[in-house]
Amino acid sequence: MKKRWSVPALYLACAAIVVSTVFVLQSPSNNEVATVTEQYSVDQNKAVNDPTGEVTEVNQSTEKMAMPVVDPSAITIHRSFYDQDASAEEQQDALVVVNQNYFPNLGIDIVQDGKSFEVTAAMSGEVKVVQEDPYLGNSVEIEHADGLVTKYQSLKDISVQVGDNVKQGQPIAAAGTSEQNPEAATHLHFEVYKDGVAVNPESLTE
Image 1 (cartoon, rainbow, N blue to C red):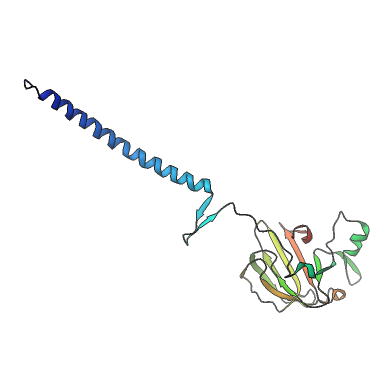
Image 2: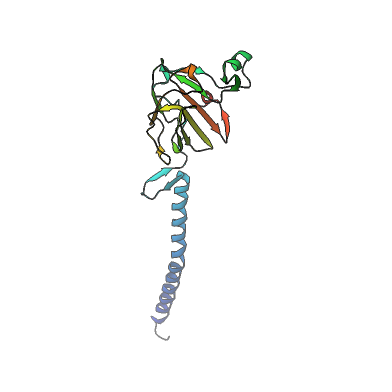
C-alpha cells in the first residue's frame, strides 16, 4: 500500500468486478425482453404456425355461402322457402302437397330450363350423409363451420362419399327427380340449417 500504484490498481480491480457483475445480471433480463417482444409481434399480426410451417392469418375473412350451382344466373326458383313473414299468397306458393296434405317448404327448389345441371357445394365442409331415396330423391348432407348444415335432395350421379372434405363450388352431383315433387321435374331441392333450424337459403347466398 505504500507504493503509489497500489491504490489505482485496487480501484481498477474493484471497478472491473462491478462492471462484470452488472453484465451478468443484465444478460437474462435482455433475453426475456427479446422473447416477450417476439411473441407480442406474432400476436399482433394474429398469425399462427401450422404443422407445415406456413403462417395462417387468424382473422381471415369468413366464407360466404353461394348458390349450389355453376351459373346462378341460369337457374329459376321453382318453389321458395316458406317464410312466416311472407304474404298469404307467397306462403301458399311455398307449400308442398304430399298425399293431399300441405307442408311448408323448408328449402328452395331450383330448376334450369327443365334440364339436369351440375350441383356444387354451397360452402366448404365435410360430407356427413350420402343417401339413396327415390321418394325424396338421392341426397347429400354437408356440415360446415358456425353450426351450418346444407342438404341437397333430388340428386343423381353423386360424386362424393361420407367423410369427404369438399371445397365451395366443388361438384357433388347432378340435379335429378323425386317422387315427392314430380311437378318440378328435374330439379334440386336445397335446404340450409343453422343450429338445427331451417333458414331461407336465399337470405344467406350471394
